[in-house]
Image 1: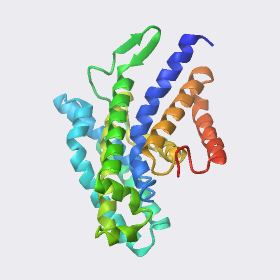
Image 2: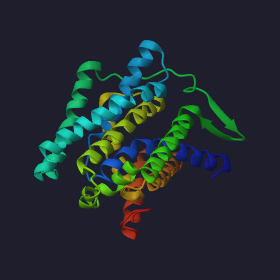
Image 3: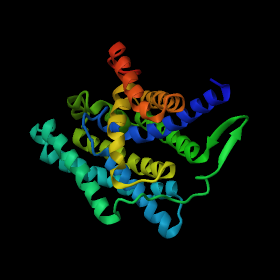
Image 4: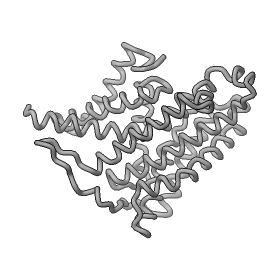
Length: 289
């Protein structure tokens, strides 16, 4: 095992982990903090990818800048989706199975609409940083991975500061634990959950832009991330954003090592095997309470 190959595998894993953190942060909010099993989250990510593709193809606008512009629209979309979910299922106490079916149906409908609209051909975007690679010594830093990783870490840091230092942020972290206490403070738990779910879906816009920068996309590619995002969320500790980043980095490094030295087909098996071992030793996850 040569040193340059080892270091490149570590760097590639860290950059991949940064992308995984962006993909998972929305699940960490909806599932980890709100107890809402939104398996349709990858569908919103793919919608974000296609919006980035449409704007990039028509206007040449940078995919990440496009995602930032459409963040408010995704936030409002998330609020609407949660309100429908609440009135139809959560309010009646039927969120467990029927709510899961609701999000599965949303995933399926989104995928079908995208297929009917764009077909099954892979789509990609153009940006100045997609091709070039920085080299420091014998370690490569592909800009198409580095820039999404850096923006992803800024996103998670900003969200963590928002959750820790604002009243609404602290209410989001408390809403799944003690709704009655929030009501005593004259705070509507449903409004807080609606805000939190809107934020979780807004993160999908950025994750979608990162995805189409890293690789071409087609409507069903989001399925590949359903198991991975929930695994990272659980591994990091339910509702812990720092834990999400650590778990994403670990998973990225494991997948990179496995793909480099044993072949890419082994990467998912090794990653999920690590998840099972970790949860057997520490059921609450790495930073779980």
